[in-house]
Length: 149
Image (cartoon, rainbow, N blue to C red):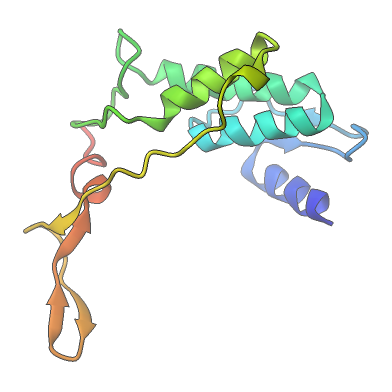
C-alpha cells in the first residue's frame, strides 16, 4: 500500500515511475531538475531498501543539480542574498558520496540542523495569537535566508 502511494507521488512530481517493489516497470526520469537535499535522502533510502542502482543514480542526479546551483567554490547557493553555514545539502552530498563509494554504513545518520532563530522582525506580518495579543515574530529562514538576488 505505501509503495503504491509513493509510486503515485513520484509519477505526479516528475521523478518517473519507481515501478513495483520487485523492480518491474521501473523507469526513473534522470533528467529531472530537482535540487532538494531531502530528495537525495529519499532516493538513497529507496536504494538501501531495494539495492537497485537506478535509485542511486537518481540521488546522484539530484546531487549534481544541487552542485550546479552553487557558487564557483561550490559552498553556497547562487540565488540567495544570505546563506546559512549549516546548509543541510552538504551533509546530504556526503551521504551520497558514501553511498556511491559503497561505504554508506560508515556515515552517521543524517541530523537536520534546526538551529533557527525565532524572534521579532519588523518586516514580519502581525499574527493574532490571542484575543488582544499580536505576534510579529518570524523564523530567520523566512526573513533572511529566503531572500533571492
